[in-house]
Length: 378
Image (tube, rainbow, N blue to C red; front, top):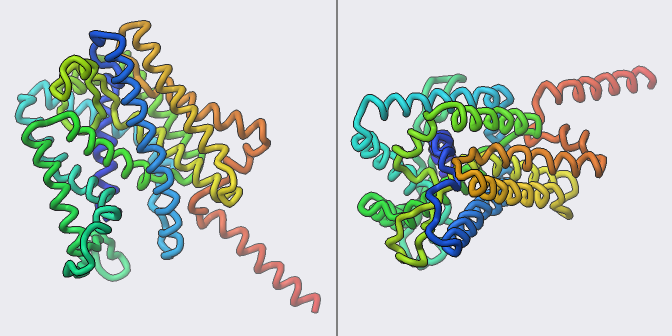
């Protein structure tokens, strides 16, 4: 299922960047208590996908390595192009909302994200769900394979293995999808949003710290420009109805589950820093065998600090804040500062999930030359 979900997660993350204008910046709450509950809940919901997704990314990377497959990861070129692609997508949505009725656009998006959300939720719940299905349940393995090209140029488009139990789990998750379609309830929205975020942190891999710096640095300026420089992001965020954000009502204490005064956090503000923090965890595991989680914990604390800073500044200035303005310096700066203090900066920047062939080549050549010299000496 990972091969199917990874493309869907990329799409949802890309769309969610359009929602950053309202990141934790909903309406001014009616009561301080309501604000505390809402923003505290958003912080908890934000750190949960990063924590779970990071550990799942370590497991996913290990499984791919053991199977001999190379983990799909963003290249430096992909990282540099991502803010540009996100900008084109954002402006395209803005034009669509100006030209066409937002009701029809959101109707199409609702169906699209219903499909993606059910698959993403099933990918998360399937390992747990199948344990509760009796062993007497008739189970059969299936393999859905769709390729393009032929011969040496053949490529997998869809490579999906599943069982009857997975189908049952998918049907169960579809119930929540129907709830979202029918009611657009904020709890159903959050279930899909959390599933997207966990999948994103797990499956979207950065190969090295340099790539992470390029991606986060580019989106840092992207967020600032589209929030403070134009009304594009705010317009799209207000018009866009999809589970690409986490929401929590600020009037929950007064209205219960029917509350409607929401504070929001875009998934882009979870997944983008989250994939960098997941890289730090994989570095910790590779660097010291997992005995220490220094850089993961540092990045995790930095993320929480950046998110709290976003909320505080928003309330002081009473204005929408681009969360990446605070999250990027925190998530990059603090781990790098710790690396400088510990003397690990060179090792940290030299780490790669998948060492490139160009870097392996000199090592192989060197080994070959050594062997020749040794033979000559004999």
